[in-house]
Amino acid sequence: MQLWEFLLKLLTDYRHVKIISWIGDNGEFIFIEPEEVARLWGIEKGKMSMSYDTMSRALRYYYTDEKKIIKKKNGRRFVYKFEIDLKNLLGYDSKELQKQLCDARQLFADPEWCVTHVGFGVNTK
Image 1 (tube, rainbow, N blue to C red):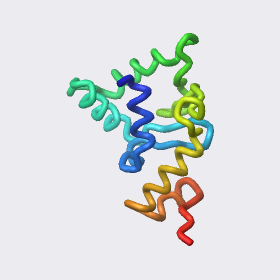
Image 2 (cartoon, rainbow, N blue to C red):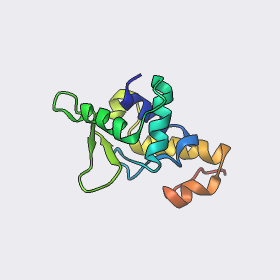
Image 3 (cartoon, one colour):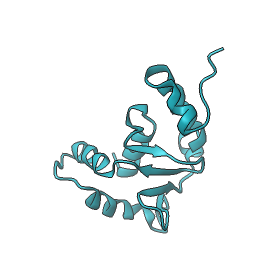
């Protein structure tokens, strides 16, 4: 699994919204707990000493003109943006992924979170 795929996996799992989360609806996301995301990436790769600094260096690989998968948002700490077409890749854009995430979070964890953080919730009627 590549790092960008791992980040997408975390972003689509409601259990990780306290460490990494979508912001806005144009593919931007933020590392809320960057060292924890790096720790999980280290576990995935079998490198227990993984730090955010090391992981962020690996992220730069995806900035290149050839790749254009992720880019760092200038002037915004820990904020990145998926440059790839998520809709084409996954069948959902980032806004639709956020909606699915909120649906799962409301069903399984914290129904008020989506209303507070994203501005919409599951229609239970």
